[in-house]
Image (cartoon, rainbow, N blue to C red; front, side, top):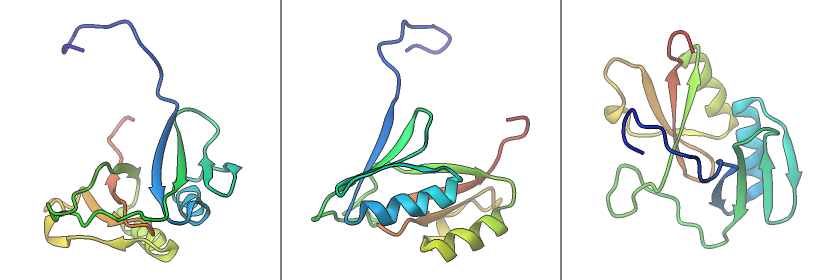
Length: 132
């Protein structure tokens, strides 16, 4: 799509799936983080959210977590999560099993912070944009 030019939609984003060694545990982490229900739970596939796009977690026994920001094992994707209070949100995600990453790489204005979920996928907590 070119900026300012509307294209006919080919499809609609349905699910964002993340590989991980324990789909149930990672789904529970994101269900708590995002306040969404776990809507499907199978041995190798767990889904969070009722509306699209949903998050899904797929069993990958040989999953190698990215080592952000190490270029030897870079992130393949990450999630940005908008929050009203970054301090309170940080306390909650750390209690859920997240860990803080690369404090020196965070935004010096403290508008976002980088974490790893329990399976090692990077995600950011960001202050929600005004009016959104």
